[in-house]
Image 1: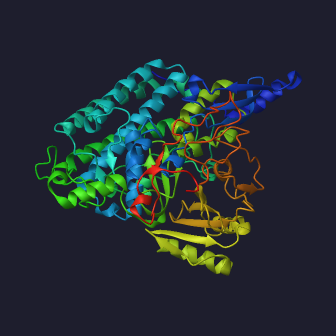
Image 2 (image 1 turned 90 degrees about the vertical axis):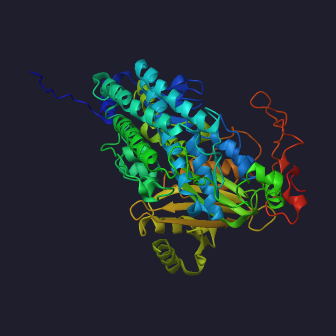
Image 3 (image 1 turned 60 degrees about the vertical axis):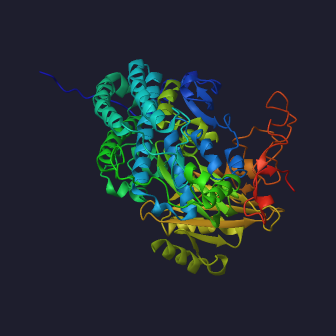
Length: 423
Length: 192
């Protein structure tokens, strides 16, 4: 018969206090350790300057910007449509979700987000949810690998490969998808795609269960991530965390529920939240979010207007020649469409003056676009609110008191991507 | 609309300091007349109206206009779910306004980024350093008079010291230009 035994797990503050006590007469000079920018656990080019007292971190100063490409400057100098490929390169682990977020922001400026055809809305939701699974799988795989569980990495990357195949089938690219257009999507779903997606969903859950059996009750895993880097509710809000990091701290805030967009109100799904806000909770929230994403995908497959082969010819674009490029055949044969095509390509769509902010629930958190328009085809100013940038700003708060070996676990649980952080 | 009610409350509390709420696409914008008092307005919004979450701070360069800078705050209340946008104009000579890091800690990095990109300083900020560009970089790249092609840097070895390959040829469109020649993508230099 199995017996239950209590395991004493103290939080990082208690560990730090004990260590200070033990090291009382060994106090010496503090050491400064440069972690990154090229360090496998920093998942890109994050540099953290750590001040150490022995093994204990006393101060942490993150240094970002190594991947800065000036995306906001670039956006001011091109039409709205031309910027879509740049959004692929923000959170490059979930390009489809970025495409959706950006298109929705510009559509909000144009005031057409309510006119999107239902089929387009369902396609976009499926894109966003596939991107969420893909991003969480990478985050989880890298998180586990950094803590020594290489098997998990191999399992999650096998599933990500299938999502890339799906992305390739709809957009032609595995990574830099650029799939959405302002007012719609690049093209309708290819024949057989929904079946492929259904097959992926059916195979994915057993595979996720396998990962879960490897980690969730694994003594080594739990010991390393539980009660580590606890973020209280108040701190999570004060530091502006978003996405799974905010929900991991027990705050039920998901833009898909609180400020619904696309067809999310028609879909059933739950928002998982954590209870203590430690690394383990953030891991559990991501695991459950993947299951909820599969639930959303399965509902979309069932409910999408037009079905798999779109026999009823449901549109996927807004029927407005001044926003969406007309079909090529009409451009070649009709005067008005030719004019629309010419104006759209050379000048872009005519946006009204004004300013909007749109936040999208991306896998990493709230990806927001603030667009300040003075009319015409280019934004006067576009600010990208990158969730990774904001989520990383809590590092100086949570690192002190942790061990050097804890840094990889904390960074893995925060799940950031530098392409988006540095823009 | 509840967001409008919150805007009216701020207006009632601060009177002439705050402009009439402007609405566009469902978003409410309030202009704060005196940038020196932005922290005070923010603290009131957080403590009394429960706008506990600062989504973002952005900045706009109104090149050739006065005031040159607009700093834009996006506030949200996670308990009531409403959003509000506060804007403060800052003149080029001054280029400084009070920090709101004392209200929300998340403002720290947002303000550092605005200082880095636009050169607007935040009075009372605990650690106002550059964040995306490197320490010692001499320009503020998001200003409208900074060319898209970049400028040579006098720090060879740290970053490229020659202009970016786009020099001479970024094809730039002007939003809302008066005629087709302005609206078309063309080679342009700042000041044209």
